[in-house]
Image (cartoon, rainbow over all chains, first blue to last red):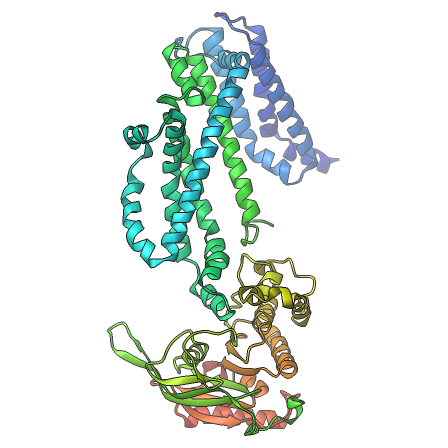
Length: 321
Length: 273
């Protein structure tokens, strides 16, 4: 009896409840206190309700123990703090008007925009994703190919490496005037900028990756009968894949910012375009809504890239159990 | 032929010479730019089907010699002939097994073993060999495993058959058992003998383990450092299978050990009594 109560206390201790209670409290406060401004509070309430149920369920399931329960226990304080933040923010904005408008809207106003303009946001996400996919794929491809050439052949290294060294430090955005002249329309301009920003980090790490492949792999392959081209395909390229992914993860961050900036300078859709537009109308709730959606979108992209990486690098020690 | 049972100290002169090392010198530059002779005027010939061990303390040039025979390196003076032809580069006919198994980590065990066949473009004709060599290496059931998932002994067995699948004329073994624990090492020694006897491949083994050299080889080549030279070649006449505990074995082992002292070189510390 004593043991089971201790287990209960340990596994669903104060901290685990703390992950749930702030959301429930925020929801209660939101319903009890009337807003001082005109706002549709339903989307925010729905969000709080969903989060309350979600963390409540995780808290309940963590009673059974196991690694997921431990992970929840570790994260519980943080989840709870976010709930507290929601509650305080909501009270300080829509409920009391302490935070000055229109610059600092409350979470209810942001959720209202996200919900009301969901069709526009979905469209903008697709615009941004299309631009990112085209630019990033082109940049990664060019980056890996030039990195492999530089890493593999001394001649390419001699001619291309210094060029890359200089070109690599120039932010892609600085090349806007040039790219605008060369490219026929704004979409291809944006694609080029995103591609350029992904190109150099990928090329650099790929070249370095090939250089750091253990020399004896090449010796073993040569003795087993491989010619240069076969070694390129079967030793240099697979051996460089971890480095290519190191470059890709550096490049994604840079490519995201290039993406948003290039959408701001003359695209006809996309999250960057939307932020620019909303700013023009002093509609800060929409700006924040776009930022929230951007964060979710970019995290999803990173997760997808990570998934591909784990699939491709299954041979690496310690990466998979 | 039943070479295993009738191996003698001096192999039958009728068998052709597979590897001939003629007055080879190889120098390396040290940090100050002075030449250090890793090999100084070394000559050695190895006949078909022989099992020869190169043994000596570190710096005696045994690995340098093996790399020269493989064609991974070129001598400053002298020449190396393989089947009568000068060695100018590597060839799949001179297989090489490294101290670290050196399996390609991004390929499965099966893909590693098939590498030579695929690289040479003969995979379709010899596809069935891969399964056969997998069994030979005792790796059935590990086809789809990646090198980091198997033990050191398994990796080294895979590396052995990865070289043998090319049916090389000679297999060069660069301390392939150096990084293994003693039980795994003895296991691999048996496997090596078994493969040698069934394939008849000429073997040149670099080792710093006197027991291993005496247990496996027909001839033990003792090398001394600074400059790297061959000081003695001892024929091991006793037939296979050899018994590590027998009086003959111990006597042979002591003979090799004594040669080390006579040659003025200290044997590796682990053999100091």
